[in-house]
Amino acid sequence: LIYVTNQEIKDKEAIQEKYYDNKNINLTIYDKKWFVVHINDSIGTINAFHIYIKSHLDGFKLPGSSFDLMNIENDPRLFVFLRQQIDNENENTDILHELIHSLILYSLENTDPDKNIVCSKDEILAFIHDKYKQNPNYYTSIVDDLLQSMIQKPREIQFHSKLHGYCLPYETRERIKLQNANDISLYNAFADSLHKRIQERIPETSKQIISESIINKVFHKIFYIQGLEFADFILNAANQEAFEKELSDIISEVIFKERINRRDAGIIQQDCQVIIRDIVYRGNTVEKLYISKLSKTYLMMFLLRFDPKISNFFSLLANKLKVYCHSR
Image 1 (cartoon, rainbow, N blue to C red):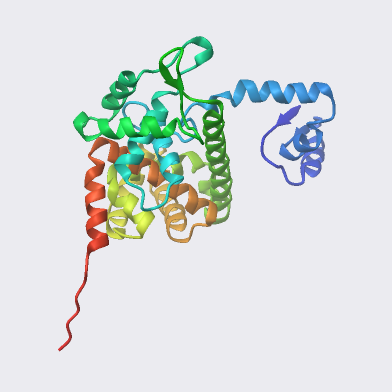
Image 2: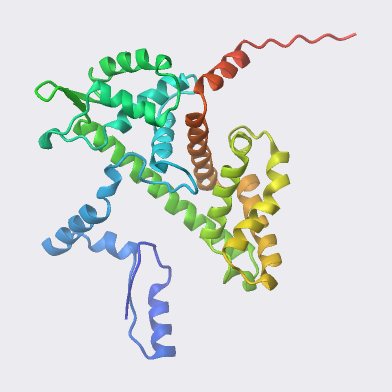
């Protein structure tokens, strides 16, 4: 019996011996540590590694192909990609400007000059209008300015003069791959941390039912139902009341859809609340970073549905706000 995993297994020799003693079966475990040590053993292992990379990780080249979002219309990868671009900017960035900048990049994801596939300016504008349902007068001039600046060094897009259209250059595609790979790495670290938290905090009777998947679904559901309020709570520690008020109902809904035995549902709901509150209020660095990025991803969804000018307006208003105190 051979067990292969991308996780590191502690005391795997002891596990193999115990399995043989109890089941009389030879178990061989190939874990993450084994692959790191043996990946360069021979031409065969090196080729196998490259084949795996090409067949399993090539999808990372697509913008926003890392996080999965629940119950979101259109293309959920778009919101992940928007968040990745906003992550790279400072807090004073003009949101509308960055939104259009990111949509331009996203519109070019399927371009390939080797196959004569490029996008014209009109096609880019049509794509943006399809995703961002606002008056084109708001952003047409921004698109014009960005198309000019993004082809300058260090370029983000390329204008192909022979094909008369725009495409993504190699360096931009590589940056997108790296962003997606970093997101996947963060998600795996979060899943490991969540698994450890469940093992430490949840009674043995519940461990067989509560999974990392259920907790993750609860987080997505909270973001989807509470919207900006929960995002504001995660990013700015505001609106705690809204989070606490609906937490129990949201967990109950997720558990119901998982078809968990009614006899166990009440206990499982309490245990889920323990885990969720632990992460939100006392989460470690990985957990906080993952939830923060998830929050920003949903925030991009809300901003794309509505007008980012609203967010800019209140940001500018807050920056100019003056508070006068008077004491008697």
